[in-house]
View 1: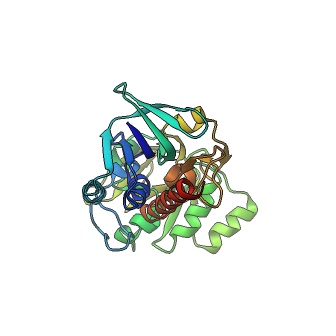
View 2: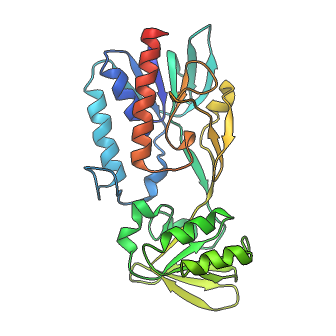
View 3: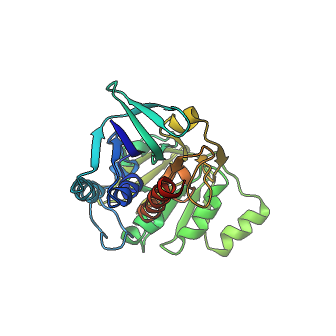
Length: 299
Protein backbone atom coordinates (compact mmCIF):
# COMPACT_ATOMS: atom_id res chain seq x y z
CA UNK A 1 0.00 0.00 0.00
CA UNK A 2 1.17 3.52 -0.79
CA UNK A 3 1.18 6.11 2.00
CA UNK A 4 1.49 9.86 1.96
CA UNK A 5 3.87 9.67 4.91
CA UNK A 6 5.85 6.88 6.53
CA UNK A 7 7.30 7.54 9.96
CA UNK A 8 10.06 5.27 11.20
CA UNK A 9 10.01 5.28 14.99
CA UNK A 10 6.90 5.15 17.15
CA UNK A 11 8.08 7.03 20.20
CA UNK A 12 7.45 10.67 21.10
CA UNK A 13 8.84 12.34 17.98
CA UNK A 14 7.42 9.80 15.55
CA UNK A 15 3.89 9.72 16.93
CA UNK A 16 3.85 13.52 17.13
CA UNK A 17 4.77 13.75 13.44
CA UNK A 18 2.23 11.13 12.42
CA UNK A 19 -0.77 12.64 14.16
CA UNK A 20 -0.34 15.98 12.39
CA UNK A 21 -0.60 14.33 8.99
CA UNK A 22 -3.38 11.94 10.04
CA UNK A 23 -5.42 14.95 11.13
CA UNK A 24 -5.10 16.27 7.58
CA UNK A 25 -6.78 13.11 6.32
CA UNK A 26 -3.61 11.78 4.72
CA UNK A 27 -2.54 8.14 4.81
CA UNK A 28 0.12 7.71 7.47
CA UNK A 29 2.19 4.67 8.41
CA UNK A 30 4.26 4.37 11.59
CA UNK A 31 6.81 1.57 11.82
CA UNK A 32 7.75 0.99 15.45
CA UNK A 33 10.47 -1.35 16.73
CA UNK A 34 9.26 -0.89 20.31
CA UNK A 35 12.63 0.19 21.71
CA UNK A 36 12.20 3.77 22.99
CA UNK A 37 15.38 5.19 24.46
CA UNK A 38 13.78 6.03 27.80
CA UNK A 39 12.32 2.55 28.35
CA UNK A 40 14.69 2.14 31.32
CA UNK A 41 13.09 5.02 33.25
CA UNK A 42 10.09 4.37 35.47
CA UNK A 43 8.85 7.95 35.38
CA UNK A 44 9.01 10.94 33.06
CA UNK A 45 9.26 14.51 34.31
CA UNK A 46 9.17 17.99 32.84
CA UNK A 47 6.69 17.20 30.06
CA UNK A 48 3.75 19.54 30.51
CA UNK A 49 0.57 17.79 31.64
CA UNK A 50 2.28 14.40 32.01
CA UNK A 51 4.69 15.01 34.88
CA UNK A 52 5.48 11.83 36.80
CA UNK A 53 3.80 9.39 34.43
CA UNK A 54 5.53 6.30 33.09
CA UNK A 55 6.90 6.93 29.58
CA UNK A 56 5.35 3.71 28.33
CA UNK A 57 1.91 4.78 29.54
CA UNK A 58 2.20 8.12 27.75
CA UNK A 59 3.21 6.36 24.54
CA UNK A 60 0.38 3.84 24.82
CA UNK A 61 -2.14 6.68 25.11
CA UNK A 62 -0.53 8.52 22.19
CA UNK A 63 -0.64 5.45 19.95
CA UNK A 64 -4.29 4.83 20.82
CA UNK A 65 -5.14 8.44 20.02
CA UNK A 66 -3.30 8.26 16.69
CA UNK A 67 -5.11 5.08 15.68
CA UNK A 68 -8.46 6.76 16.28
CA UNK A 69 -7.83 8.45 12.92
CA UNK A 70 -8.94 6.12 10.11
CA UNK A 71 -6.04 6.97 7.80
CA UNK A 72 -3.37 6.07 10.37
CA UNK A 73 -1.71 2.68 10.72
CA UNK A 74 1.01 1.36 13.04
CA UNK A 75 3.14 -1.65 12.15
CA UNK A 76 5.21 -3.28 14.88
CA UNK A 77 8.62 -4.18 13.53
CA UNK A 78 12.04 -2.85 12.67
CA UNK A 79 12.61 -0.92 9.46
CA UNK A 80 15.79 -2.44 8.06
CA UNK A 81 16.05 -0.78 4.66
CA UNK A 82 14.94 2.45 3.01
CA UNK A 83 15.55 3.47 -0.59
CA UNK A 84 14.43 6.22 -2.91
CA UNK A 85 12.01 4.76 -5.45
CA UNK A 86 11.50 7.11 -8.35
CA UNK A 87 11.57 10.88 -8.28
CA UNK A 88 9.58 11.48 -5.09
CA UNK A 89 8.75 8.16 -3.44
CA UNK A 90 10.46 5.96 -0.89
CA UNK A 91 10.28 2.27 -0.09
CA UNK A 92 10.80 0.93 3.43
CA UNK A 93 11.34 -2.76 4.15
CA UNK A 94 10.87 -4.24 7.63
CA UNK A 95 12.45 -7.20 9.38
CA UNK A 96 9.23 -9.05 8.57
CA UNK A 97 9.97 -8.66 4.83
CA UNK A 98 7.09 -6.24 4.32
CA UNK A 99 7.70 -3.33 1.95
CA UNK A 100 5.80 -0.06 2.12
CA UNK A 101 5.82 2.94 -0.18
CA UNK A 102 5.50 6.56 0.86
CA UNK A 103 5.74 9.98 -0.74
CA UNK A 104 7.42 11.47 2.32
CA UNK A 105 9.49 9.98 5.11
CA UNK A 106 10.11 11.07 8.70
CA UNK A 107 13.04 9.46 10.49
CA UNK A 108 12.33 9.45 14.23
CA UNK A 109 14.72 6.60 14.77
CA UNK A 110 16.48 7.81 17.89
CA UNK A 111 19.93 7.08 19.23
CA UNK A 112 21.55 4.31 21.23
CA UNK A 113 23.54 5.19 24.35
CA UNK A 114 27.08 3.84 24.66
CA UNK A 115 27.24 3.45 28.43
CA UNK A 116 30.52 3.74 30.35
CA UNK A 117 32.04 0.36 31.11
CA UNK A 118 31.68 0.45 34.89
CA UNK A 119 30.43 -2.60 36.76
CA UNK A 120 26.82 -2.17 37.88
CA UNK A 121 26.15 0.92 35.80
CA UNK A 122 24.06 -0.66 33.05
CA UNK A 123 21.75 -2.32 35.59
CA UNK A 124 21.12 1.03 37.28
CA UNK A 125 20.71 3.09 34.09
CA UNK A 126 17.48 5.09 34.21
CA UNK A 127 17.05 4.41 37.93
CA UNK A 128 19.88 5.92 39.96
CA UNK A 129 22.30 6.45 37.07
CA UNK A 130 20.81 9.31 35.08
CA UNK A 131 21.44 11.52 32.09
CA UNK A 132 19.23 14.60 32.28
CA UNK A 133 18.86 16.73 35.43
CA UNK A 134 15.79 18.45 34.00
CA UNK A 135 14.12 15.04 33.67
CA UNK A 136 15.21 13.49 36.97
CA UNK A 137 17.17 16.01 39.04
CA UNK A 138 14.36 17.24 41.28
CA UNK A 139 13.69 13.75 42.63
CA UNK A 140 17.30 13.32 43.83
CA UNK A 141 17.99 16.94 44.80
CA UNK A 142 19.33 18.05 48.14
CA UNK A 143 21.89 15.31 48.68
CA UNK A 144 25.34 14.46 47.35
CA UNK A 145 25.37 13.81 43.61
CA UNK A 146 27.99 12.36 41.32
CA UNK A 147 28.94 13.01 37.72
CA UNK A 148 30.82 10.21 35.97
CA UNK A 149 33.09 11.72 33.34
CA UNK A 150 32.88 10.57 29.75
CA UNK A 151 34.87 13.45 28.28
CA UNK A 152 35.03 17.27 28.22
CA UNK A 153 31.21 17.53 28.13
CA UNK A 154 31.24 16.31 31.73
CA UNK A 155 32.61 19.70 32.82
CA UNK A 156 29.40 21.33 31.67
CA UNK A 157 27.28 18.63 33.30
CA UNK A 158 29.06 18.87 36.66
CA UNK A 159 28.77 22.66 36.84
CA UNK A 160 25.10 22.53 35.86
CA UNK A 161 24.05 19.87 38.35
CA UNK A 162 25.25 21.89 41.36
CA UNK A 163 21.83 23.55 41.26
CA UNK A 164 20.43 20.19 42.45
CA UNK A 165 23.01 19.25 45.10
CA UNK A 166 26.65 18.98 46.13
CA UNK A 167 28.54 17.47 43.20
CA UNK A 168 31.60 15.28 42.89
CA UNK A 169 32.99 14.89 39.38
CA UNK A 170 34.56 11.45 39.02
CA UNK A 171 37.25 11.70 36.33
CA UNK A 172 37.30 7.92 35.92
CA UNK A 173 40.57 8.04 34.01
CA UNK A 174 38.87 9.77 31.08
CA UNK A 175 39.02 13.41 32.11
CA UNK A 176 41.55 15.51 34.00
CA UNK A 177 40.71 19.22 34.34
CA UNK A 178 43.43 21.72 33.54
CA UNK A 179 44.09 24.72 35.76
CA UNK A 180 41.41 26.88 34.18
CA UNK A 181 38.85 24.08 34.27
CA UNK A 182 39.65 23.36 37.91
CA UNK A 183 39.02 27.01 38.76
CA UNK A 184 35.67 26.78 36.97
CA UNK A 185 34.76 23.67 38.95
CA UNK A 186 35.79 25.29 42.21
CA UNK A 187 33.68 28.36 41.40
CA UNK A 188 30.67 26.04 41.36
CA UNK A 189 31.94 24.14 44.42
CA UNK A 190 32.41 20.93 42.45
CA UNK A 191 34.80 18.42 44.01
CA UNK A 192 37.02 16.51 41.58
CA UNK A 193 37.91 12.86 42.21
CA UNK A 194 40.58 11.57 39.81
CA UNK A 195 40.51 7.91 40.86
CA UNK A 196 38.74 5.56 38.47
CA UNK A 197 35.38 4.09 39.46
CA UNK A 198 35.45 0.30 39.80
CA UNK A 199 31.78 -0.40 40.52
CA UNK A 200 28.42 1.14 41.36
CA UNK A 201 26.14 -0.57 43.86
CA UNK A 202 22.76 0.27 45.33
CA UNK A 203 22.94 1.35 48.95
CA UNK A 204 19.55 -0.10 49.95
CA UNK A 205 17.83 3.26 50.32
CA UNK A 206 17.63 4.39 46.70
CA UNK A 207 21.13 5.82 46.48
CA UNK A 208 24.48 4.50 45.32
CA UNK A 209 27.79 3.41 46.75
CA UNK A 210 30.63 4.38 44.43
CA UNK A 211 33.51 1.91 44.74
CA UNK A 212 36.82 3.42 43.63
CA UNK A 213 39.81 1.51 42.26
CA UNK A 214 41.89 2.27 45.35
CA UNK A 215 39.31 0.72 47.69
CA UNK A 216 37.68 3.91 48.90
CA UNK A 217 33.93 4.34 48.78
CA UNK A 218 31.65 7.34 48.33
CA UNK A 219 27.90 7.65 48.74
CA UNK A 220 25.70 9.62 46.35
CA UNK A 221 21.97 9.91 45.85
CA UNK A 222 22.43 9.50 42.11
CA UNK A 223 25.13 9.42 39.47
CA UNK A 224 24.74 11.52 36.34
CA UNK A 225 26.64 10.76 33.18
CA UNK A 226 26.53 11.92 29.57
CA UNK A 227 27.22 8.83 27.46
CA UNK A 228 28.28 8.99 23.86
CA UNK A 229 25.56 7.86 21.51
CA UNK A 230 25.20 6.45 18.04
CA UNK A 231 22.39 6.18 15.53
CA UNK A 232 19.89 3.48 16.51
CA UNK A 233 19.02 2.85 12.85
CA UNK A 234 21.02 2.69 9.60
CA UNK A 235 18.25 4.26 7.49
CA UNK A 236 19.58 7.82 7.39
CA UNK A 237 22.94 6.59 6.15
CA UNK A 238 21.29 4.25 3.63
CA UNK A 239 19.34 7.16 2.18
CA UNK A 240 22.43 9.35 1.93
CA UNK A 241 21.40 11.88 4.58
CA UNK A 242 24.10 14.20 5.84
CA UNK A 243 25.31 14.20 9.43
CA UNK A 244 26.91 16.70 11.77
CA UNK A 245 28.90 15.93 14.90
CA UNK A 246 26.80 16.79 17.92
CA UNK A 247 27.79 17.18 21.56
CA UNK A 248 27.81 13.44 22.21
CA UNK A 249 27.70 11.81 18.80
CA UNK A 250 26.44 12.11 15.23
CA UNK A 251 23.23 14.03 14.50
CA UNK A 252 21.18 13.88 11.29
CA UNK A 253 21.53 17.27 9.60
CA UNK A 254 18.22 19.09 9.12
CA UNK A 255 17.25 22.51 7.83
CA UNK A 256 14.87 25.00 9.44
CA UNK A 257 11.92 22.84 8.37
CA UNK A 258 13.32 19.57 9.74
CA UNK A 259 14.16 18.32 6.24
CA UNK A 260 17.38 16.36 5.85
CA UNK A 261 19.85 16.81 3.02
CA UNK A 262 17.69 14.35 1.04
CA UNK A 263 14.57 15.97 -0.41
CA UNK A 264 11.40 14.48 1.02
CA UNK A 265 13.12 12.95 4.04
CA UNK A 266 12.59 14.64 7.40
CA UNK A 267 14.11 13.83 10.78
CA UNK A 268 13.11 14.60 14.35
CA UNK A 269 13.78 13.59 17.92
CA UNK A 270 17.05 12.52 19.48
CA UNK A 271 18.53 11.49 16.11
CA UNK A 272 18.21 15.06 14.83
CA UNK A 273 19.35 17.20 17.77
CA UNK A 274 21.97 17.15 20.53
CA UNK A 275 19.73 18.08 23.47
CA UNK A 276 17.33 15.32 24.36
CA UNK A 277 14.10 15.09 26.31
CA UNK A 278 10.46 14.25 25.64
CA UNK A 279 9.32 17.83 25.15
CA UNK A 280 12.05 18.49 22.58
CA UNK A 281 11.14 15.26 20.77
CA UNK A 282 7.43 16.13 20.64
CA UNK A 283 8.19 19.63 19.41
CA UNK A 284 10.53 18.45 16.67
CA UNK A 285 8.22 15.65 15.62
CA UNK A 286 5.23 17.95 15.44
CA UNK A 287 7.10 20.42 13.25
CA UNK A 288 8.47 17.66 11.01
CA UNK A 289 4.96 16.32 10.48
CA UNK A 290 3.56 19.74 9.65
CA UNK A 291 6.40 20.50 7.23
CA UNK A 292 6.12 17.09 5.56
CA UNK A 293 2.40 17.64 5.05
CA UNK A 294 2.91 21.12 3.63
CA UNK A 295 5.46 19.74 1.18
CA UNK A 296 2.79 17.33 -0.07
CA UNK A 297 0.50 20.29 -0.71
CA UNK A 298 2.93 22.86 -2.06
CA UNK A 299 5.77 20.68 -3.31
